[in-house]
Amino acid sequence: MSAGTPDAPPAAGLGATFLRLAGFLRTQPGAMTASIALGLLAALLGLAWQFGVVWLILEAMEPAPDATRMGWIVAGIAGLVVAGRLAFLASTALSHKIAIDVQRDLRLALAEHLARVPMAVSERYGAKALRRLVLDDVESVEDGIAHLVPEATANFTAPLIVLVVLFALDWRMALAAALPIGLGLVAMRAMTRNSTDITRAYYERSAELAARAAEYAAGLPTLRLFDGEGRSLLRFRAVSERYLAVIGDWVRRVLLASAVLQVCVGSGLLLVLPLSLWLTARDELPVSHLVIFLVFVPSLGGLITRLPNFAFRFAQQGEVLSRIDALLAEPPLPRADAPARPVGRTVRFEGVGFRRGERTVLDRIDLVLEPGTVTALVGASGAGKTTLANLLMRFHDPHEGRITIGGVDLRAMAPETLYALVGTVPQHPWLFTGTVAENLRLAAPEAGPSALAEALAQARAETFVAGLPGGIDAPLDHGGATLSGGERQRLCVARALLHDTPILVLDEATASADPINEREIQRALGALARGRTVLVIAHRLASIVDADRIVVLDGGRIVESGDHGALLAKGGRYARYWALQNPGTPSGSSAQEESAYAARA
Image 1 (cartoon, rainbow, N blue to C red):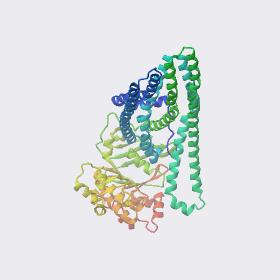
Image 2: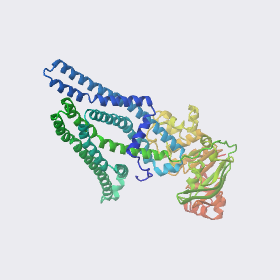
Image 3: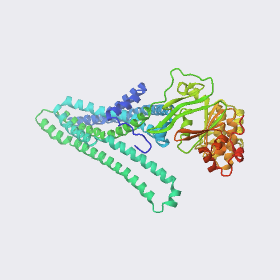
Image 4: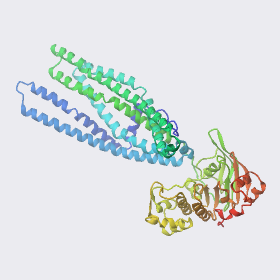
């Protein structure tokens, strides 16, 4: 699969894909039955003109043709054809209604499942792959539900009915008509045997092309400066050529399969015509039957030649459904059968271990966060700081040991209980499309104007929010792209204030802020931390000198622990980090006012 996307299981065969899509239709049995029935009716009425032509020919062969009757036959044919088109439109309308409902249910099911699985699943897929799966792949299921199943049912039932009628009239003639079709189907099956592989290759190459195109567009300023020889363009061209090669292979298979099938189907008359004339000359085939065969055999072939298109579209649907099923098959975090509610607020990490594949990220972590205290995690990138914080929010479950709040294992709590206790201000602020007020009420849906205003004031965000067009009701598009990073972060702090949890996780909340915004964010965080149990991740050590406890991680293990003064006096790893960041201020006294937590308690 494309980069960042786990390999999906092999796509199901065409028959299994048809049954899976039909299963979606069965979620609304009344509409499904009506849609398929109308589709069958439309297909049968589509044969009306052939019956009409046969009738007209036979009427014209009478010694005294009745012009009035022939006129009525023509009018009847026109009426039946119009009725067939109306039946087809009604069938399509019903199948589209089912498709829209199924798409909605699929997207909701995927979203709900993503909320229950470990964050490792989201990390493994990546945001772009998940967006494509939830939006684009689910959107493409519409073709299978709204078109393929009803159309295939109708279009291939009608030829079967015609074949049955032809065999009832004369088995020899019917066999001559069916033999080339059978040979064409065998040849087409041989040419499309690996249609699943080519379909998967198409999706892989199209995803690769989309990713490289986005990368190339985003990096144009850099490429202009550093890639004067056009190496990146050559790489993009190579990706494009791989994509075109797959498309070319796909088109060749479809065209070749269609051509062979059409040649075989078109050969039906080469057998039927001489055989029919020979049988008629021997008085073994009535002229009326001769006319029926000569009219229906070509149209029978026309219906069958749609098979290659249907086969490849079903292969596409099978590939899409395999990716959707792969995500839905990801096991969710287990839920306790009898959830417990903690009484205390003490957080304990007891022998906690966590791995990513074969790599140990955390190893035998023992740590206690006492109520109302600030514990800071420091260490080099990859030391395990964010993973430890994520385990407290149960984005993952530890592979060894346990984490408790008030003596209750996180795994024994209902999610709503845990997230009423633990809140966060992430490193990268997240806002959704909506108003400022709607973003804040994500944490407290019932919050009134006064509560919102108080949270904004404490987060030091009231001034810039008041300056927005519409104030607190100002729309935020594209995740608040019109705001600065510091402003978005302060709105996240306000949201956390409204959430009002006793335990708070701060993940390098000032990492990307400019000096002015950093000071404002630190003051807002000071208001947020007051009276709460705080676990903070910080690279800037000046911001955590007032922490009750500073824990130094290295290689997934705790190597030092203590307050700022004690760790400086020890002269270990923390002291070296401090000296690198704050040369000439060994005591840290000049950084006291920078601490985000000086205002707490």
